[in-house]
Image (tube, rainbow, N blue to C red; front, side, top):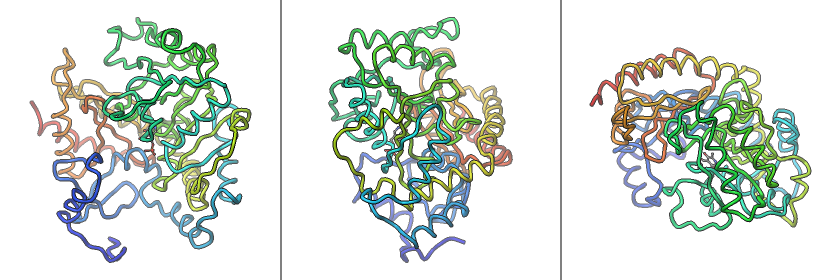
Length: 438
Ligand SMILES: Cc1ncc(COP(=O)(O)O)c(C=O)c1O
């Protein structure tokens, strides 16, 4: 079934890795000591160029929401390629407005007007630009440990030094994040009464001019290692930032499209209606898409001209609509919640067995394990994390890595996996942890 005829190129594992080293920016790092060039995929499985099959529990960084090359999605993609591939934003097109109408129906609150681009980075750029124009303010508040993308502005919004090298962006300040496992205040939830949220007001009062354009946060911090705020956090944050004039931007690049279970968007679990939502990744299931959706009065405040050559591309929009249809028709939001809790129970059992696992966290099918050398001191275990990933890969399971300290295993399989897939993943993880036992 391997599509060996694509471009008739059959480079070997070694040749691909050699050319990667020779021709690609080295800052783009690969997983594993010996990186694994991939060849083809179907639903929850991926095959490397040597024909080894993997169960994919990372989904190309939280992007494969309905399975690799899902035939119900790509049949519509292919039909659109044959019909109309590109027109640019100079012309309206049916796939774009149909997708936008659907998004207006499923986003929370009064979000109604969409702007399409090609990536999460651009989605966040657009959100900050429009919030500045809407509020007349310039300064922006983000959270430490957050990740917002790779443009200069998005790197400035990012709250981890590792992703900010060479970046100086003025007018952005970072409040402490609600990282309960490593509380920045050394407190314990719920006795802390979510004291960390007060830092937002402190930051506004002492590190800005007192008028703020936007507060941008991920409902669950993705690259940071699926750091999941307590249930009170975002309502409290919302009430603070609104008093200082900010638009509330929920960066749902990783948390949207049912990933967190039951709801379309992560922020809905915190019962907050954002002013702007940004997304990308799972909306396209592999095609490049960026979405900024805003309340009409915010969208209408965008001044001057703007275009996106590929934004709203008919092929992308048909694909994104097909992804949403599959999630709806197969009730994958419920599957994410149910199979997600089953998976979480399995991970908690592994935590009982394996001392390396310090914390199990996340929601739905967005689940992480934070690995520590010692549960009492919580000393981070980046080497152990790499070792578990290698062992899992050898046994045919792909998992992701994250966290500022490189010690978090991130898992985000397609939303349509079954309990049998989870059983296989848990069995492989169990063996992998056993193999790297300290
Ligand atoms: C929360 C979040 N925002 C923005 C981005 C940037 O998205 P992209 O890589 O599509 O530019 C990412 C990418 O990982 C992300 O996780």
